[in-house]
Amino acid sequence: MPLTSDSLRISEARRIALHAQGFNDPRPAGRVDRRHFRRVLDRVGLVQIDSVNVLTRSHEMPFFARLGTYPRAALADWLWGSGEIFEYWGHEASLLPVELHPLMRWRMHQDGGHAWGGVKSFQRTHPGLGEAVLAAVTEHGPVTLGELEHLGDAIKRTKAAPGSMWNWTPAKKAVEWHFWNGEVSALRNPQTFERQYVRPDHVIPASVLAAPTPAAEDAMKALLLRAARSHGVATPKTLADYHRMPIVTARRLVAELAADGALRPVDVEGWRHQAFLHPDAELPRWVRASALLSPFDSLVWDRDRTEALFDFRYRIEIYVPAGQRVHGYYVLPFLHDGALVARVDLKADRASSTLLVRGSYAEPGLDRDRSMPLLAQRLRELGAFLDLDQMRVEPRGDLAAPLAALT
Image (cartoon, rainbow, N blue to C red; front, side, top):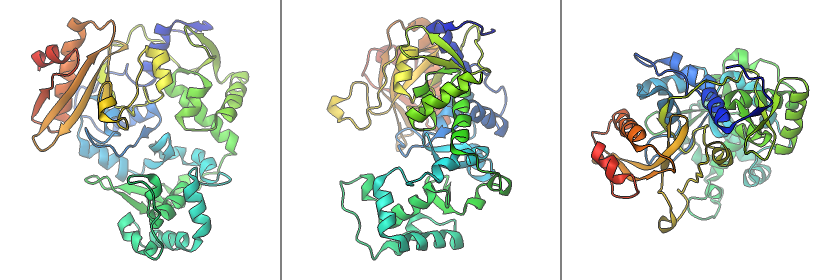
């Protein structure tokens, strides 16, 4: 549907966003392969990585949400064996198409270096270890952090709370400094997900490494346009957040892009701030997708946008004490017919080969007759995708009884 108005109803903004994120693309009818993975990555632009594995690795879920069941080994081969993808700090730790490497160099070359002060200060005080770690990766990579640890054995381990980022070993801080600066890249072990550090040319094609480095603001503008394409319609804050760039700079650059006609200002019903529409944005008549969304899916990772777009308040409660959690530890929103209509707290109990639905909750306006059968179907698909033989719905939440009856 052509987009000519300077204002959008919230229902229109939702459909634009869902189409931009790939939820209006039909699921593959046959075997899923690299063409389909590429299509998803082209839509979303980057995929966030997270270490939490209570269900499955978070980067697998955006592909599952948009494609359905696929060979997990085939995704791993593509991500870490094709030369098409690299890992870097995009939206947090992320998987990005290699053509974005030149656009991320403004961050790699950022004056002042690493965003985390502890890593920056450590590099200044221990330059010799940094040089030794870089030499080890260059000469012997792929190498794991464990294989680099002996280089930092002489330096006392930083004291911090267990599990803290600042409890990193000296070798970890040194190699992360080089990873941030683009002097080191990484692969992942498909079984353990452990990083294996390598030279950039082990991951990035020579033609990409040789490509000119754009001026920082030109690169940021290109990334803002990519974020706009993946969102369809969004505020400057949301566009800046997609690749985690400074909001003050992003607001100015978005205004310049709008002045040049690369983005179009629009007002969205109920939004307090000016929104901007990508020229390729499309408004479908409807979106029929049903999908379980990872907490780290790009459709919902901006919690303020999720609330403004879907009237769905979403907070991940991993770090909330168990007794204070409202919905559970690892809660996935359920998308159906253009709305977020329910949420389920899931866990893969691998010892018993069971998908545990630890809690299931309806959102206001849920049409149970239409939505519940598809929620049950998507949960069964997820269990099969994860090679789990059974599913158990625990009696927590207002959807537990009807969902158990369907499964």
